[in-house]
Structure formats: C-alpha cells, structure tokens
Image (cartoon, rainbow over all chains, first blue to last red; front, side):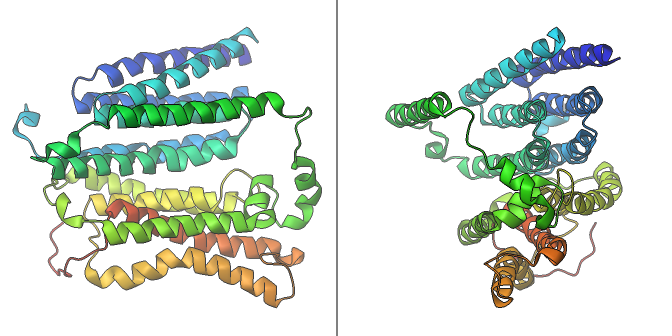
Length: 89
Length: 316
C-alpha cells in the first residue's frame, strides 16, 4: 500500500515539474498564474498522500490551508490587473 | 525505500533550480510566480524534514499572503512607472557583485557552522520536553513560542507593528484606482470561501495548543479574509477607519506586553504565566495576536493609511 502511495507521490512530483514548463515559458501572465494554481492543487494532493505515507495526519491541516488560500493570488491577479483591450481576445 | 530517495532528490533538485530561476528571471511577474511555486516545494521539504509547524507557516504566510502582497506591489510599481524609465532600471553591476559577495560569505559561514558544530549538536529539545507539562500546551513549538521564549514572539509582533507604521507613513493608495471591478464569479467565490476561512482561522488558533497551528497561521488566514474583502471592494477603508485600525494594529503589541506586565504584577517573571492557568493566558494572548496580525496583514496589503471619505452608496 505505502509503495503505491509513494509511487503516486513521485508521479505527482514529476507532474509538478511538468507544470513548471508553463510557469517558466508563459508566454502570457495568465498562463503563468494558472500554471501556479495547478501546481498548488497538485501540492494539496501530494500533502494528502504524504499524510498517509508518513503517518502524519496533521498534514491534512496544511493541505487545507493551501487549498483555502490557493485562490487568493488569482483573485489578486485579476483584481489588481489593468483593463487592456488585447486581453479580451 | 529507493522511492523515498528519488522523491527527496527530485524535491531538492527542484528547490535549488526554482530558487535560481526565481532569481534569474528577467520579468518581475515571472519572478513572483516562481517564488510562489518555490513556496509550495519548500513546504513539501519542511514536511519531509518532519517540521509540519514550519510547513503550515509556509502554507499560510508564504504562499497565500506573500504572493498577494508581491503581486500588488509589482502592479503598483508598474502603474507608477509608466513613463518613468528609472523605476524599471536594473540594479547596477557593482551592487549585484556586492550582494553576491555578501551572500557567498554568509553561505560559507553557514557551511562552516554545519561542519564545525559539535556532535551531538547542542539542543534544548530535552529541556523543552521535560518542561512541556507546565507550559500549558501540548505542542512543543507553541510552548517555546508563547511560553518559554515568549518575548522573542513579542518582539516579532513589534516588528510587524513597525512595518505597518512605516507603510502608513509612506504608502500611497491613489495609484490603484484603475483596477477593474470584479464580477459575479468572484462574489460567488467570496460568499462560499470567506466564512470557511474565518472558521479555519479559529480552528488553527485552537489547534496550536496541541498540534501545528497558532496565532501567526490563524492570523494569516484571517488576514486573507481581509485581502479578499479589499480586493472585491466589499470593504473600502475610509479616513474614519484610521482610529479603529490603529487600535487593532496595536492590540498585538499592547496586549502581549500588557500580559507580560500583568505577570510581573503577579510576582512572576516577565511573561511567566502561572502554570495552572498557562493555557488560558496563552489562548487569550494568541487570540489577540490573531486578530491584530490579521488586521496588520490586510493593512499592509491595502498599502497606505486610508484617506477616502466615507460613501453611503451601495454599489456592489
């Protein structure tokens, strides 16, 4: 069981690295921001797996805090953005 | 256990690479996003190092609040730098090399400490665990932060207070007027998430007594509530809010120091709580800190002393 969890953790970690491609290459700001959100979601999943694999149930609290705060950066991204014409396309 | 090794090595490699990429990024926005992603990986690393308290702090402060603060600061600067080329200039080569030299020396000193430290490394962990029973809490981290080394935490709160004072002195709220208004998706989100965030802040505050949690984490989550309210213009501070804001900003420092004076009056050491009521003392202090830290973080996000006149229009 724990081997399966561990394998899943490694796979998720590798998908995190895959998501980094979009963060680095963009090209638009929204691409980078949404990629970061995706990585945040993966991190929540990773923390839940780690909480079982490492027998640390309190890690679920960390996952909870990540999950509830994940959207703050995106809301900030949208709300402080400038209204520009070419964003509409 | 080969897979654990693979996991840890990939994690370490990713952290080093991300740190470099965040430093080397040419675009400020890319830098901020990379820094936020770095926070995710670092939190995972803290978990692997069996330090869930630090991982929780990273989750609460590092990812959510810091990202929002950096983003807002970046937009703010860019908004003002339009037509001001000097604001966009990169730091000089000499400054870069100077900083690089300092960082190299610091890293070298850290490495030397790592090598020269006696084995087994000196540790106060045993002393902490031996006295945990009289600390009033079951989480050794909270016991150190709010009881054994409470004045360290008091000074941290003072730092936060000093920061908000400086921001109020120097901040300029006028530059953010061009921001778009948010639509119905946001308000659905806010309606759903804000009450849950308040609940989780209370949960984290209580949790600190026996598990990773506490005032700073709870304050960060509650502060995020304030940030969402500000972003959605569900709450727009006006000049009339200055006095209550000052009171709440000061609550952490004054309440904590006041508790210290009260313990002196009881004949104990400064911040030496009576052992039989230590839990109550810690909880009351942490509750004040939570509210004060939350207001301070939201105040920092607002970025200036509110100056607008109160408006009575209901335009949401």
